[in-house]
Image 1 (tube, helix red, strand yellow):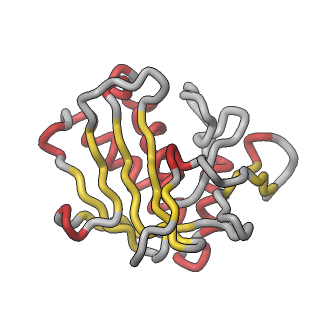
Image 2 (cartoon, one colour):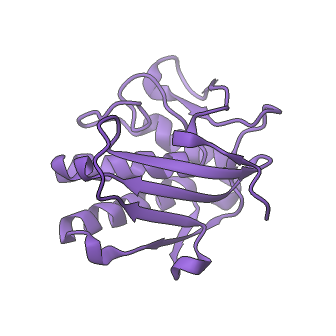
Image 3 (cartoon, rainbow, N blue to C red):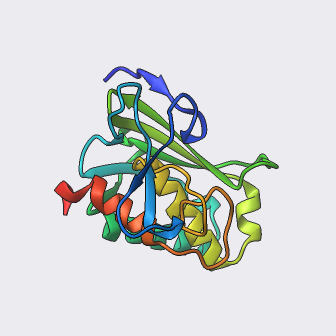
Length: 182
């Protein structure tokens, strides 16, 4: 597949469109990435192949990533399958460079309305948070990889790190985008 568009931080060049799915309020809404034609963007299949060098992560960080992957599978119905690097659509990278503006970032590549590949980069600042917050940071980034964008409020997809965020919009958005996978 040909890489058509590269989104930086999962937001550049894509208009943000609020999609209400329940009662009013930031915790009951979600936002989907859309392409230039207005189509909602989602992963190209119900399986995401990923790679990650767990050797560079502490046991706590490994557990946080595994829990976030399991939660994302439960919310979306999408299966995450670990494969060798050369076969992976999603590469989880541990950066040794600090980013003062982010603790993690996701950069998807798009073909029409489908993600074909993505890189999820974890910066050292992520590890300064407690375990529960790390899990939520990874849920947030997997949400970007599957097509969600930032929302206002205290949901997992909020643009700021939030203590004890709700997962209502995150779960609803993933469930709606991937209802065909469940």
